[in-house]
Length: 368
Ligand SMILES: *Cc1c(COP(=O)(O)O)cnc(C)c1O
Image (cartoon, rainbow, N blue to C red; front, side):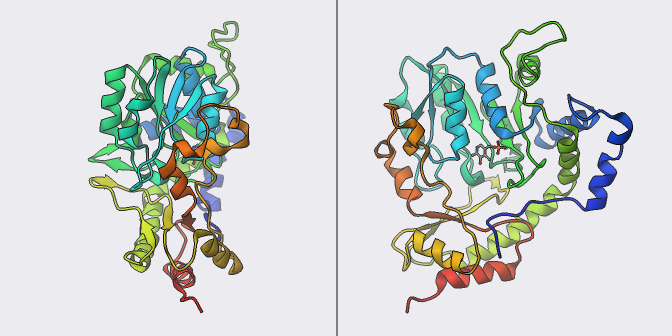
């Protein structure tokens, strides 16, 4: 069986060595030594002034949206071509998602459609670096500056992506990363917010810890979103091997590209200019191909190969948003078109070239 993803892990011995000290310190969570070490290592690795660690990426996004203290009911321009988390985080922070369509090249926010969605209620833009493809960060930053909006990136897919020497963690006012087991870099479950504004350090620290700034002072209505020491230890280990893991992913992606580029009816994302990819996902769009997306999905399934319809359904078609005036996939036709035709193929560091060939053989099988 080949699953869509398979978690990267250090050796058993390496992880045991890393967590050994916890049996001496008996300090298991609440910003312990491992937490502080991982935070410093990530600030260095990503080249950002500040990293705040979280128990998962979703709560990291909710926390930064709440920390911005937008007026309740403020509108946030985002895209529906993403994981449920992005839209839910906006709504759970008391804000209203306004869905912008995506472009049909890399499936990130269509920057030519942002300004027409801005109203006097708009407070922020939450674009998604979907599949690790970077958004048009320059255009988004220009629009945000012109209209006085904050930009918070859902960078869950973009850990390790670098554009012209600058890591994806440096764009906008803040970026959220997910370190979930299925992502390029994992801390079992985990996440982070990266940002430059010194004033946010204390706010985020307090907000992820019940809004408490000390044992007797509680300035914020906060929840519990702290990363624990076992998660941080996994992160410390996995960071040592990240570059090697990304290199292995690259080899798998190159084989996919070799087999599937130029095939009529199959569309692949082009490599982005000046961008070093993290090879997070390998989406293929079946548009006028011998088989439909659902047929390819089923053919792979028959052989115990699990691909994913990322991202279908679009978040603006979710039942929970049926009553929202901003919902409805007809407002985002390009996203709807791709969502009906896209399949992300299995991809992880240990996926062999032979496995990629087996998957491509099934996809390319002639119809009998
Ligand atoms: C994984 C993911 C999240 C949520 O991250 P968790 O760490 O699983 O909470 C948010 N947005 C996108 C686009 C994701 O893929």
